[in-house]
Length: 231
Image (cartoon, rainbow, N blue to C red; front, side, top):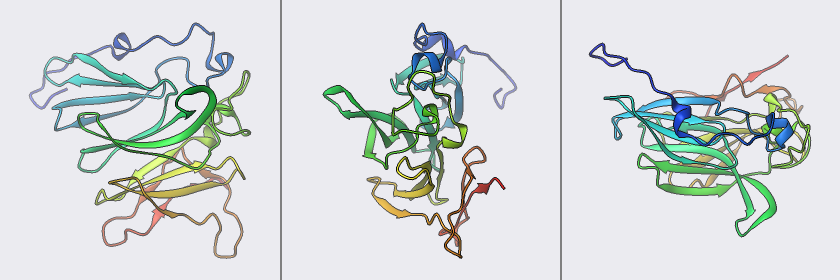
């Protein structure tokens, strides 16, 4: 609904590719949801419209005037997390990409990338090997074999520093199953810091929940991040 009181509806699914003809994501073994699974919508001033993102990998813009959806593109391995910077000029995306771009059989690695409001890639880096959301609790990236159940506790969470100069990513490392928060700079996604996974006594902090997200403290206290722990 616009400020003028007019409203419209649009079918986002009408412009995206249909899912594979498998009965379910677990049966297909790709770890992706059966449907588009739209999880993020944001108004972007530069586009004067909405940007909608699905976990299956679609990015769709919606014109504010007539509600017409338009497919920008699709990530074949889905989008695990996405978040616009506070100024709505940079979109951070967490996905998986082929370990060897020329060899589709080489497996997948997690990747963090940023795009501008015109959806041009600004930077892309391969991150620490993670436990994929669709791969259950074992195996490296892209390991979600047939029959593997999605593991919500392996989901990825993101948040931007309030001034937009850095983005934090919370994911579960496949090497030891520990959730860690890594901070990357805005411009080139250079790794700036890796959060401690232990408390003051040196004990590992378990059960940090991505479903509640992570949040950066406000300006003037920008070194603190908060997460929720399941007891």
